[in-house]
Length: 330
Image (cartoon, rainbow, N blue to C red):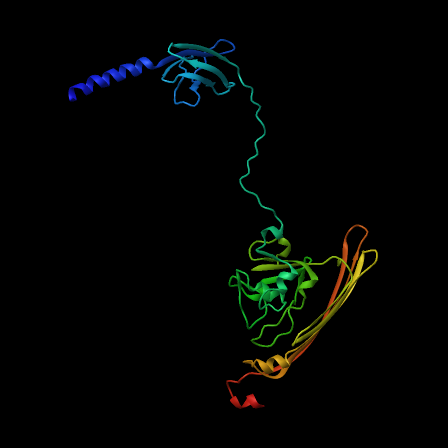
């Protein structure tokens, strides 16, 4: 049996070789010059060849029937030709035309940035974002303290960014430095900011780079953009267990000017009687806050804005004296 295997293999190899059809030919351009390295393939098969230095090619295939032969070369148009493969050798000569390529403009972008403070800012918040931040109680600074890069400091007002002091962060309203953005405070208790978040259309908080316009800042800049004109005249009122407030904004009929007033009254007596506080208050906190604004649009498209605020507060608390504990009951 083993003696028959080798003759059978030889017979099969001879039969396979005899069954293959040889395809030869050449590829030239329209000037009858040989095309070197042109690719000739029998589509949907693994059979094909590449032209030599004289533009000639040759390969064998065992396929039978109708096929398409394809000729490709760089900078030349691809051509296809129908082909019927039988048992006889096939000779093909191709003439391909040069393909004209137009080099279009190329734009290389390695990276870009916009120089505006809004694009570089860590966070841009709306008024609604601020008043809906848990624990902020509608205070701009308290809302920003919840963001990455800012520290929670409860005993002193201000924004403390990346280990910096509170004075290193400056606040700007329409590009103007605000020297005293917080209310009067008592030792070891942080006070609220003076401004309502609804006065501004955008709150930009930058913990990194910012424009040279805000060069007074060291750690970061809080950039506030005030509203130009309200969309319509409106009145507002609010009431809670610790706060009463009302406001009114009047838009002129020609929509070129507006004025508005706001008032708020805060009294924490009821809240502090229910929720006992660690500081020993002998006078519960009570605050009156009011503000007025006026805006007018100029002929050249500019804006003139006026804003004024008033606040009055009273509170008193006792602190233990390290020299004499009897002073607590004074």
